[in-house]
Length: 374
Image (cartoon, rainbow, N blue to C red; front, top):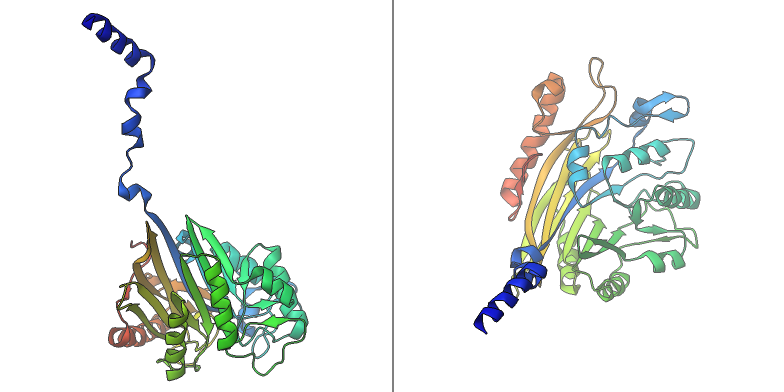
């Protein structure tokens, strides 16, 4: 009898080996259930007259491929990369400051650089009126670039806002607002998201209904060229956090401002507040406007979502020169010295010194990283 049982067991092992490995296959360590996502935030994508002329290859053709070639890999590594599109795509005539209209090739280069989401609620979104707003949205949709902040009508806003991103098992709800539009009124039925607490509170509640893991508000605010945030920025940031926003990303001053990682005193969750990312690429020459930030926010999730890491990288725009680069080109600040002329390198070091001094004094729990680092 014992012999028969042993024989039967042996036959089962040979014929149905999976029966005796089921527990091994089903065993999953806690680490295997951890979800991760990397978000990358960049500042103002400007397009001044000199940038347009530098990119021109014929009367109506432009090439921006060189602009992002040294930062493209870093942008593309992120799961979601977001930047502020501070121009319209209104078509010809192409114009710089004060009423921006960039060639379509500029947007193509931005997409090719790796950006997934572009913000359109800023003070230049109505530079070319209703036609400019609507053509900009149309171009973004045509290239399948996600966008938020301006809409052709209220129905479009209702169906597309808050912008919900689903990636790597995360649900991320995005909001975008601007302080104003340089005094240009919105032409009905167009919609621009303005900073208005009553409207924002409704939007935050709508975002919560999406059951997101995080709510991120991207805000066009503050005073131009000031290295420290104003009291009204801090007050608005505190208000947004109190209403349920998880992280806040700011822009508009065209210079970098401090980065803070707040820890909630009750549940110990961390909330990122970036007061200003500065310019990403531009032709601006005012002090401290020739560089900006890439802020890398890493989240992880098991039963709860938390910040696993947050760092910033400094980038700098080299303008065309007689003996070197032909187009406005972004460089990480740790690029080889030989990549730049002596004058360019001196200017970049001037920007870096100011930014690092500012951040050393005012940043909270957010440190610098360099491309290629984890």
